[in-house]
Amino acid sequence: MARSIDYGNLMHRAMRGLIQSVLSDVAEHGLPGAHHFFITFDTRHPGVILADWLRERYPTEMTIVIQHWFENLAVTDEGFSITLNFGNNPEPMVIPFDALRTFVDPSVEFGLRFETQDEDEEDDDDQTDIEVEEEPERRDAEIVSLDQFRKH
Image 1 (cartoon, rainbow, N blue to C red):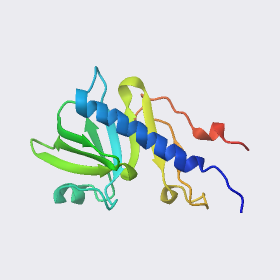
Image 2: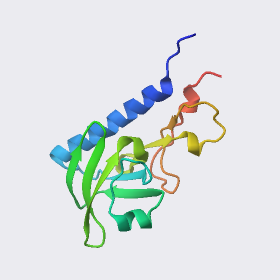
Image 3: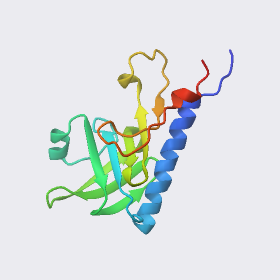
């Protein structure tokens, strides 16, 4: 059996490690300058903890904004917890890194998008693809696709 390098999983770990480092720094020192984050995650992921009314409103996917008001940001190796304000209702939530779909900081034109097997039906293997790009509805971030680095 031939051994091969699993670049997909290595990239996932590296990108989640990057997000963990960024959020840990923000938890300790606050958001610097104009930095802010749009984080989209799968609300169906088993480790996600949300208020029932948020889960009902966002049954599959939710995007949160970490910018002006947030409290209790705590980061672990598995994910992060945070309290955000929804219409003057502070709501705590727990989001595992494995639930993340996108992480965007439009202030510096940076974004990550995690594509899973379910989102890419053409891919027959069990690998998860990662693309570094902006969210489709935002035009602030530069799109960089990892496909350009793959051998054909």
